[in-house]
Length: 293
Image 1 (cartoon, one colour):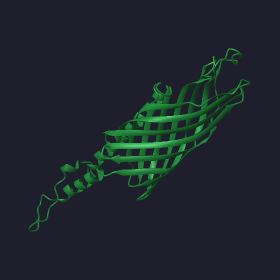
Image 2 (cartoon, rainbow, N blue to C red; image 1 turned 180 degrees about the horizontal axis):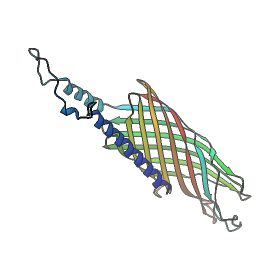
Image 3 (cartoon, rainbow, N blue to C red; image 1 turned 120 degrees about the vertical axis):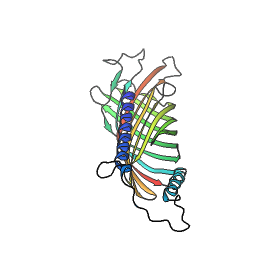
Image 4 (cartoon, rainbow, N blue to C red; image 1 turned 45 degrees about the horizontal axis):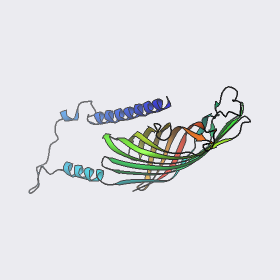
């Protein structure tokens, strides 16, 4: 349900941004009276100077310049990216034969709490090709007083995507995310349960990037995966505004949400082998420093 809601939100934002670009282009093709620019009378041209070729205007040169710029490599590095997520979690504890089941069942949720995370990022573009990667560490804690539940999750993940432009400013992507988690849960007076799973999650996603003037860009991204290959469900959505303050320096202001659901076996080497199930939602503002090449 969460995956569907986020992916629909991303697609609606992409369609809206693309429609705004198309409308801007349509208006640019009309003069101030609303008539198509092509209907205007051609301006009088001065006679060509001797030896000057009328067919060699500035348009071909501008087109060649634009084509050369599109074929160049573009590098963006985020050496420091701060994320301030609000974290909440759901936990299903394993039922052990020597212990009574918790009242109301073995599943419960924490309240939302404010936490922190840091990221590093890299993005490469050339023509229609896109490659990008991120590395994140988050130390997360959440609890609930009635009934007493405390959850701790230290999360480290790295991701790598490759993409190809399927429409103007829109890339279809495929990638992988490596997740290493250190999770623990304590419910009422029951023994603390800990697990340290690691996953390789296959992912598919979309990225949209469009200029908003000379110094601003709108950037949208959404991906989903896991599919039971690694985690059960792994979803990420982000939206941001990139500001180019100078030729090689910029900043990014945005919002990111990640939902992760996984199950992992605890007491694996004993006859009491059971699954501990975690669901984690992290969402909050982001702020990054960007170096451009």
